[in-house]
Length: 476
Ligand SMILES: Nc1nc2c(ncn2[C@@H]2O[C@H](COP(=O)(O)OP(=O)(O)OP(=O)(O)O)[C@@H](O)[C@H]2O)c(=O)[nH]1
Ligand SMILES: [Mg+2]
Image 1 (cartoon, rainbow, N blue to C red):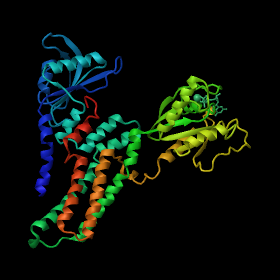
Image 2: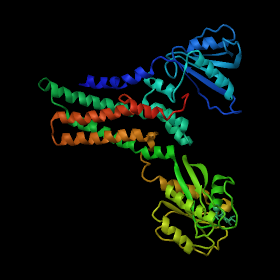
Image 3: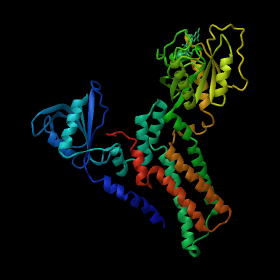
Image 4: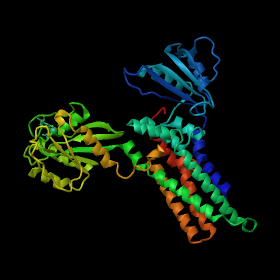
C-alpha cells in the first residue's frame, strides 16, 4: 500500500516529465533588457547540446579544456557569415553541477538590447529552443535540484518588494519551510505504515502504541498551526496594502503624501479643491510595501471636474485596506468632517489631525470617541510621519506575530495545503478518540500525507505545476 502511495508521485509527474524533459536545449535572455542601460546582458543555455552550440558560435582565446566551472574569454562569431557579434565571457557549468543539473552555459555579453538579442538568435539558429517562462527553474525542480517550496522562493526573491520579503524568500530557498514539512510527512508515513501493518498482519504483530501515535499526531498538529500562522505575514510582504488619504479639501492630504514620500508628487496650494484626481505613490514601511493614494478633497461641488474627482476619492476609499482620515487641527472637527466620517466609519481608519504646528495649543480637537487610532501631524514641517507609520504597522499587524521565530512566510497555495493537513490530523485524532476501526485512521492520514507532499512537490499535479511556474519570467 505504501509502495503504491510512493509511486503515485511518479505516475502523476510522468506525463509532465515526458513532455518537458525531452533533453531539448533551451535558451533565454536571463538579464533585464533595457535600451541604453545595464553594462552586462546574459544569455543562458541549458540542455544536452548547450556545449555543442557554444563550441560552434564561440571563439575562445587560446585552447581551453572546456572543463566545467571556468570562465572563458572570447568572441561570439556567426560561423556562416564569419561576422563577430560580441566580445563575451562564457561561464561553463556542466551537468550535474549546475542550476538545472543539465549543462548550463551563460554568455555574458555587453549590455543593451542588440548584442544579447543577436547571441540569442544564433543559439536558436544552432538548435536551441526559446525557454518558456520559469523553465530553467522547472528543470531544476524536475531534476531534483530544488523542491517546490524552493522554486516558489526563487520567484519570491525576484519579485520581492522589500528587504524583509527577500529575507523570507531566501529562508525558503534554504529549505526552512521544506525541512519541517518533510519531517512531518515522514513521521506520518511511519504512523501509516504501523497502522497498515496491523490491518494486514494483525495476528503477527504487537498491538499499536496508541499513546505514542497520539503524541506524534499532536506534535505535527502543533507544528502545522505554527507554520500556518506565518500566512498573513507572507501575504502582507508579497502584496502589501493600499492606503487612501481622505478628507475634506485643504486639510493637507497632498502635503502628507509629499512629506511621506519625500517628493513633490502631488500639487499643493492654499486653494481648497487643488487635487482633482487620485495621485499614487509607492513606499515601503517597515518592510511592508504600501501603495498610497492621495485623493481629491470630498465636498459638495458644482464643478464638473471636481465632481468626478470626488467620485474617484470615494472609489479609492472603497478599494483601500486602510484610510488615513485627515482633518485640520486649526478648525477642528467640522460638519463636513462629520459627513465624510458617516461614510467611512465602518472601515479600517486612522484619524490624522494635521496642521498642529499652527493650531492654537489650547484648542482640543473633539472627535467621535470610538476612533481609537489617532495621529497628530504637522506634515508641512515633516512632523508626525514616523508616528503615523508606527500606527499603520500596528493597525495591520494584529494577531499574527506569534510565528515570527520561524523566519518564513508561507503563500496561499502552501497555506491551503496546510489547512487540509490540519483538518485531516484533527480528524485522525477524533477517529482514535472514538475507537473507530484502523481503516478509518488511514483515510485521513493519507489526506495529510498527500497535502504535505503537495507543498514540497513530492506529490503534485501538472495543473498545479503550470500555475506555479507561470508566475516566473522568461530566463529564470
Ligand atoms: N502650517 C501647516 N500648513 C499645512 C500643513 N499641511 C498642509 N498645509 C497647507 O495647507 C494647504 C493645503 O494643503 P494641501 O496639501 O494642498 O491640502 P489637500 O488636503 O490636499 O487639499 P485638496 O487637494 O484641495 O483637497 C497648503 O497651503 C499647505 O501648505 C501643516 O501641517 N501645517
Ligand atoms: Mg490635495
